[in-house]
Image (cartoon, rainbow, N blue to C red; front, side):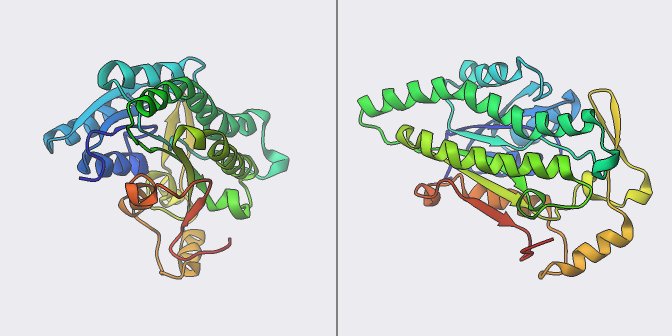
Length: 274
């Protein structure tokens, strides 16, 4: 298994793409720290990993909480005594056209998709630096991996998502900068920008689905006609699955990608613009 005994932190991994990433990395031998806003889905993912013979622990909480980053890193170090992979995946959308968008909507997307990853990586830096220094003194080569999650909305923009698009564009800039800063710690920093991936957040909006985000009921889903049009423009002719999304992240976590850093991989089914 290519990730045997690696310690992986995955935010937003109780459901959807994050869950698929956690299951994939655990299947390849990683010891996983599961995070979700809600304990039940987080524990369900952890239990599934354990039932398959893997190792997983849970760290419940909002990535936007000021003290969350330190708590997440401490959880990994206390339980597994290491830190090898960080996947900044947690997120949601809160859409509106700019003239109707509130300051709260704007700030919520920046907080979740950009500030939260920044805080997690800031908290991780001293830990990774110390681990890398100790390994260098022992003559051990261990390449660590950071994979940040972006979106085609961050690459190309998307009507009705000025807040989400801005945050997802920002995470690509953060990725490129940290690739330069963290190379000396033998750590690669990359990004995956997803297109249409079929999760609860991208289902049929007509079904009236909502997501409870810290006490707020946020409408989720895409208009049925728009969803059909989006799929028709994808060269592969369909939206992707969470497992396919996880595969793109996995590629940037394995040893074969040890010399890839500062890059954004588009996982879009061939879509090159929206």
